[in-house]
Every structure is written in C-alpha cells, then in structure tokens.
Amino acid sequence: MNDATTDVKQCVDEMITQIRAEIANNDLSEMLMIGIHTGGVWIAERLHKKLNIEPPLGKLNIAFYRDDFSRIGTHPQVTPSKLPFDIEDKHLLLVDDVLYTGRTIRAALNEIFDYGRPASVRLAVLIDRGEHELPIQADFVGKRITLKQGEHAKLTGPEYLTLEITGTE
Image (cartoon, rainbow, N blue to C red; front, side, top):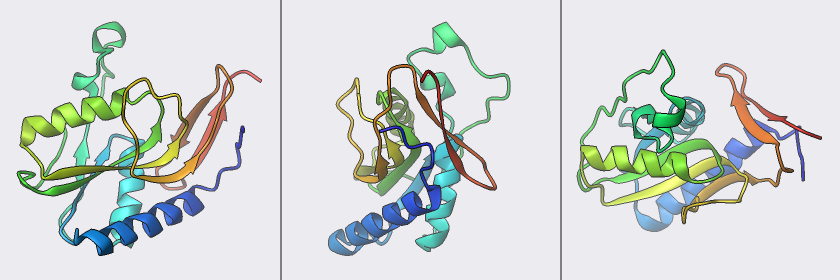
C-alpha cells in the first residue's frame, strides 16, 4: 500500500490517543520523552507539546552509535545529544519518524544505556513500514504502511511536516 498522501497530523493525533491511554492506564505521568535526530525530534516536539509533558524534551543524535558508521561515515554537521535530565530508573518514551529495520532504534537504545538504566523504554513511531531486521516493535504507531521494493519513506520538515514516498514505481 503505497500511500504518498499520508496525513502526518492525523498520524500524530493517533499516537497521542494511544500514548494518553498508556499514561492513564499505567501511571506514567512522569514519563520523559526523547526524540531521535532529526525526524523523531520533529515528531517528539509535537507530542511533547500536545501531551503537556513538563520535563524538557531530550534529543538523541545516534550518528556515532550506528552499526553502519564505518561504511557511511558521519554527516559533517553532527550535533551532540541533549538529555537534560537523569534517566536512571525513569520511564522513557523514545520517538522516531519511520521504523524500518530497527537498527536506528538499536543504536538509540545503546546510547540511552550509556546515560544510565531507565525503568522502561517505550517506542513511538509516526510510520511503521514493517520488514524489521531486529526484534524491535513500536508501542505506539501513527500508521503502518507497506512499500514496494526500492521505495523509501522520509519525513521532511520541520515547520510543515510531510511524509514523502520515493523510489521505484
């Protein structure tokens, strides 16, 4: 199902509904939120605001934690991660834009555990495109999509968020 017209706002609203239910059902009112650079941060900023989460938003840049770092190198403008809170024994909500292989999430978890040991980590993604290579599943999903061989989903922004589907037809 190639859906190039995916409404990002509608996906974010779906995520908010799911997250609010989880917070209410499991007393996670003091959950900390962390977005993965760049698209995950854009989504996390919207979720953070709409969920009225008081602690500041954490931002991870996993460039040095990727398992393909030696092959692709780093982007010349790598920014440092910013976790303006202690994560030890805290409940975390990790946010990314597109879940595909699971390798980005694995890298993010590696970095998070370098900061401490959280009580729990839940994953929220705008888009889950399936075909995971690692045993990683999102707890909160805006939308699940299936793409054809060679197609890619990319979030563009940050002011106006758009999901672009590119690749072969």
